[in-house]
Amino acid sequence: MPLVVTKSGEETVELGAKLGRLLAPGDFLALVGELGAGKTQFAKGIAAGLEVDPGTPVTSPTYTILNIYQGRLPLYHFDLYRLHDGEEVAELGFEEYFYGSGACVVEWAERLGEETPPEVLTVTLAHAGAEERSVAFSAVGARPAALLQALFA
Image (tube, rainbow, N blue to C red):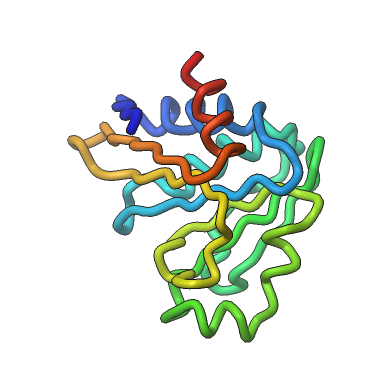
């Protein structure tokens, strides 16, 4: 499991941008970590890497649950903080996005339960100091493993 320690919010964004430049349609990223761990900062970087207009504010969709950003491919940015489990996700019909023509980034992805796609790149963020964050990566499936290999090549 590769691990990176970022020294600032800007470094967390840049790490996300590096990954965002590698994403293709159907890629699914599960972001895990406590409040304030850097999940949204990482998502901002992914949006930058996907060439979302820099003037577009990328915010955590805590109340709307889903924000869609247009870049070189659509970015489906979910925040499941307000949901309790995968059953609620299933009721909302998000599966079409999970296997759609864009890339999915899901904050609080542990709440997906059985709704988690079979191929997933999990990014676990944690506080490692006042401004530092540890960012750990794990892949399930061939495509997520290839993403990890390219990210750390």
